[in-house]
Length: 249
Picture 1 (cartoon, rainbow, N blue to C red):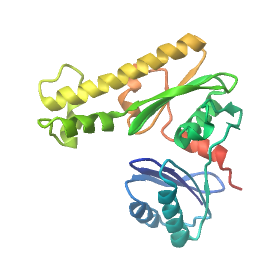
Picture 2: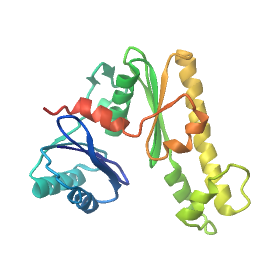
Picture 3: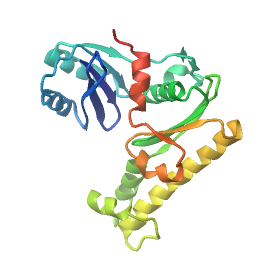
Picture 4: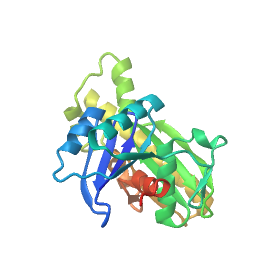
């Protein structure tokens, strides 16, 4: 069995695949290393042979996680690394190693699935947009705050904005002007996110007209899918790129 990990700034996304048929054995999202170990130990018949991971954490934090995995499961671990070029895609950053590894893998996966020009939109703690031309040239991208960051900034810096997650979820059931603070904040943040998406689509069309594929990935992708009905929602796009960057026999 193969363990795949996407170690983000706030959460660790994981899944376990059966090495031979590639079937999904289990998956989850956790907020700590210990929660990851607990989730894995809860899988019946778990027999890990290898692990591949991508991490945007510090080298020290990643090393701690790797040590825990080796101690708990006696598994070999391979980490994705920056690259100037891979699988027909050329990294567009002036300093290629500075491009976030999660972004790099997502655009690798997007280009592979599209077999042509693509716009990759990832909705996590931050929101990222990346443009890849039909010849594999990464044109660069954009980064802006995601829903969690926008929400938390308003909660932190505005004394009278206080509400819980359940109220936030209910506030997004429709997008008419808010009549409470929670409705006004949540709907305003979501509209900003949707506006960002629409500007990315305009730019992609200026490059490629209609000849490109849009990918939506990340935890909040469903929040914007309505404004991009033609998009492909691929929750595990980073894992598609991870398998390309870290092939395991």
